[in-house]
Structures are given as C-alpha cells and as structure tokens.
Length: 130
Image 1 (cartoon, one colour):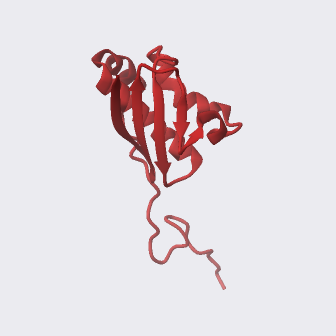
Image 2 (cartoon, rainbow, N blue to C red):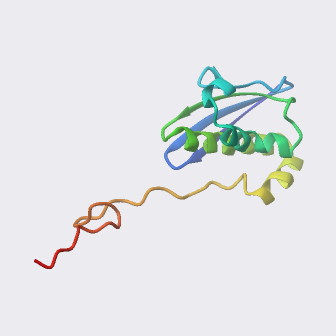
Image 3 (cartoon, helix red, strand yellow):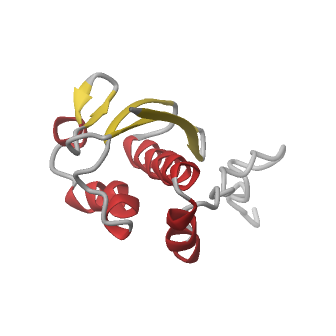
C-alpha cells in the first residue's frame, strides 16, 4: 500500500493531500465527502477531478485532503494542484500526461496590495473639479 503526500497552493489557499493506492476512488476533504464539500458546483468538481480523469485513475486511488485559507474555488484549485503533484510523484508517466495541461504549475497570481492615496490597489478617489 503506497501513500504519497503533496501540497497544492492557489492564491492564499493551501491543500494538504494524501493519495493512497490501491483505492476505490473515494475523495474526502476536511473530513467531509467530496460531493458534500462542494455542493452543487459541478464545474469546480470537474476541475478537481481533471488530473484523475486525464490519467484514467478515477477509481484507483483514495484521496484525503485538508484545505485552509481562501474561498472554496481557490481551495478546489489548490486541491487539484496537490492531487496532480501527488500523482506525478507516484508514477513518472503521469507527469508526462499532466505537464502539457499545466496541472503541475503553481498559479502564482495573487491579490495586488493596496497603495497609499488610493481606495484599492488601482482605484483612485473620485475626481471633482470644484
């Protein structure tokens, strides 16, 4: 029985992922079943399952994950990143499949910091001639 750990990140969200082989395809996030964790967000569920679908391993592994920080969408993307990293460390063939889709690359985009004299990062105070 092989158990692999990987960390996925997106914005301020972090996902700690443990992938166990062999498994039944069960995904558990924060102690809750994956379907219950994301509710009715089908497109986000598809994004999380993408690395498993591409490698044709949807029912081969059990995945247990803890997520923290950010919102549910960023946490889901962090989870996808963590699953991809764990799969690539399990088998080198998976890396060749996942790399062209950009699933092993950490999305480095984060919120720009607020500047002084401004309302937000770029939004200026409203201008008035009088």
